[in-house]
Image (cartoon, rainbow, N blue to C red; front, side, top):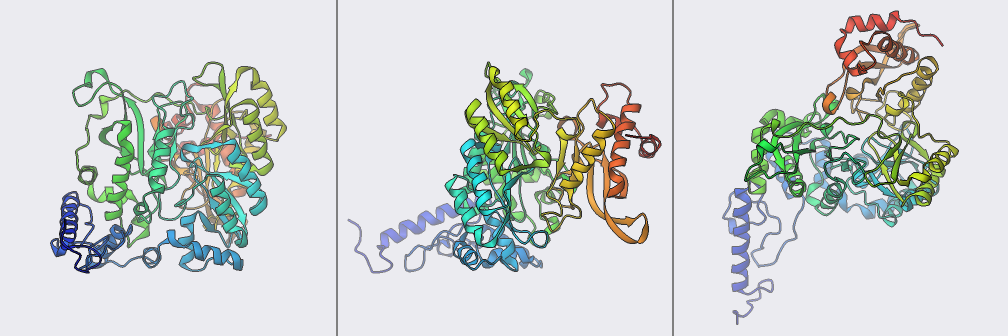
Length: 616
C-alpha cells in the first residue's frame, strides 16, 4: 500500500517520485540522442524544454508537439537572428487548431487575411488572389494511388463546390480550383467523407509522398513501394510534431521499375537497388535495399545525393522521420531563401548530417560503397502513356494523356466507370501529370482505349505531348509570370503542325522561381519572365528563358540557358527550330535529344536553331 495522498494534484509522494524519476530518465535518454527533453526533471538538465512536465504540485502538463520547433526558434533568436513572419505566425497560432476559424470564415463567406493566408495552407487551402478570387485545395494520395469511387466523389465535389475540374500535379496529386470562400468547409469535410486526409498539403510541411506509379504492377520493379509511401503518409498524419518545418519538404520512393519516381529531385529519396554478390556480408545480406539520398531541390539547381547508407525497406520510414526531426532542429528560421534542407547539408556536409540522424535514431546506419549495388535499369520515358503489360499475366495498364494535367469532372466520372467496368477500380496518378487505368484484361484493351477517346482524351501521345509538363501558371497562381498551361498547349500545337518526332522529348514550363514544373530537368525547360517587347523596347511582355539538356536519373543534369528573355510569341518557333535542328544534326537516330544538346556547344546550337527554316 502506497503512502496516503497528500493533496498535491492527486498523486502520492511515492507516485510523484516515480514520475519525476521516469521523466528524468527519459530526458537523459533524449539528451544523449540530441533531442529536446520532455520535462523540467526538477531542474536537473540545463537546456530543458517544459513540455509534458511535472508541475511542482504533481499535475501533468499536456505534451507540446511544437516544443522542438519553438526551441529551434529560440536558439536562432538568441544567436542574433530574427524570425521571419511565417515563423512568428506559426508560433502565435498552431495551424492544426484553426477549425473554428475556418468554420467562421466559411459561414461569413470570407477569405483569410494577413498571415492567416499562410496558416490556412496547412489544411490544403490556398487563397490564390489576385490570380483568382478563390481557393485552390491541394489533396493527398500517397504513392499517387486513387480508387474509382474517390475519383467519382471528387468529380461531384468539384461540381458542387469548385470549378468542375481538377489538375494533376507533379507530385502525383490532385488540386481542386475555383472554390468560393463559403464552400471551403464543404470541400474539407467532403474530402474526409472520401477518406482523403490532406493535413499539411501546403505550407511548411511534408508534401504528398510519392512512389513508383506502377508499384505492384511493374514487371521490371525490384520492390513494391506503394506500401512504404502509405506507411510514411500515415506516420506524418499522426505525428503533429512533424508539421511546421522551416520550409516545405518532399519524400519519394522509387522501386527501380519502368516509370521513374524522380526521387533524386526530393529532399529525401529512396532508390531501390540490388546488392552485388561480392558485397554480401554478415551485415549486408543478399537482396534489395534502398539507397538513401538527401538534398534534392532542382529549383535551386541541386539533385539529391547518395549518403553512402543502404537501408532495408522496413527502415526507410523511421529514417525519413529522423531526417525531418534533425531538419526541424537545425533548419533556418530567419531566411526563407535558405530554409530548405539543401542549405543545412551545404553548411554541415553529409557526414555530419548522417551522424545527427544516427544520434536521433540511437543507432548507426549501414554504410556501403556506392559501387556495391547494381546500376538502376533505364526507365521507359513513355511508359506512362499507352498500353503496357503488367507483371500479372493477361493484365495491362493504359496510360491516359491529360492535356497539361487538367481533367474535367465528367472525364473523372467516366474514367472511374471505365476502371470499374474493365478493371478493378484501381487508378494511379503520376508525376508526369497523367493517369493510369490498371488491371485491364487483354480482351478489354480495345474497348478501354475506345472509351478513353470517346470522352475526349487520348492514350497515344506524340513525343511532344507525352512529356509536356506545365505548372498552374498565372491563370491560377499569383507568383507566375505567364499562363503556362495555355502556352504549353500552344507550343505543342505549333510543333506538331511542323515536324514529327520519333523519340520522346520532355518540355517543362514553369511560371516562377518556385519551379513547380521543374524546368531545370526538362530536355527543354522554360521559366516565365517579363521580357522586352521586340516592337517597343520601352515596354515588357510575357516571355520565357529557355534551357536545354536537363535530365533525371541516369540522365541527371541541370539544364543550361540557351536563350534569355524570349517573348512568348517567338517561343513556339524557337522550340520547333531546336527540335528540327536535333533531327537534322544528330549523329544517329539512337542519339537522344539530351545527348545531342549536351554535345553541341551553346553558340553552335543557337546557330543551328536559327539557321534551320521550319515551315508548315
